[in-house]
Image 1 (cartoon, helix red, strand yellow):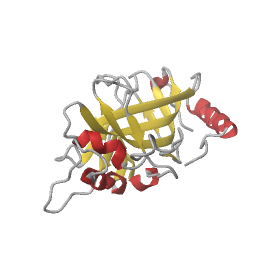
Image 2 (image 1 turned 180 degrees about the vertical axis):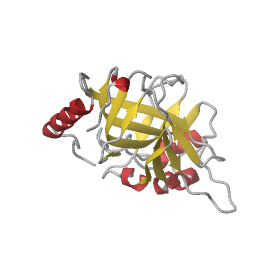
Image 3 (image 1 turned 135 degrees about the vertical axis):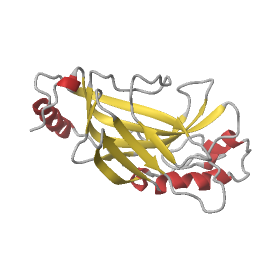
Image 4 (image 1 turned 60 degrees about the horizontal axis):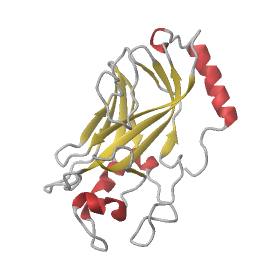
Length: 227
């Protein structure tokens, strides 16, 4: 998605809708983000965006007293040296040049993990709020984007905008910080072979980074009244 998916007019309309759903609330643009290190033995990753669970420097969680009105879902692979929070690249596809160091590989040698990590874009996402399933067939393929310029031994970075990897969602889910909100990312199982997902370099992590873009409502947990 190359252009801003949230025009000024669309944002105003969402704010007006959120104001109706949260009487006396003050919805404002915001982002939630959670990161989970990928594992070679796990094909399900649960994101709850719960602020009660300590997060990393680049994560943003939801307070128990607040609410969040979701307009877009973002997904990226994150490659980061754990000694340097915030320095990692958010990838919209498994780029060999960006991933090589995580697996102790020097270009132009092939990075087999790049092929295996494509599995995350063949997965699906589900949202359950308490015991209510909001959706369970969200395709992760929608988040995969390859720009015209890719990082390589010649190019230092992928061509990328802020909005690449973001996908609009309708109807808009609402997360209530006082409830149990669980996004479950399911990745296909391999048959008879082990995947190479996790980084092998001790200082680097490859993570699945899920972000929610929309409207943050401070104190909104007790205000939600959807018409």
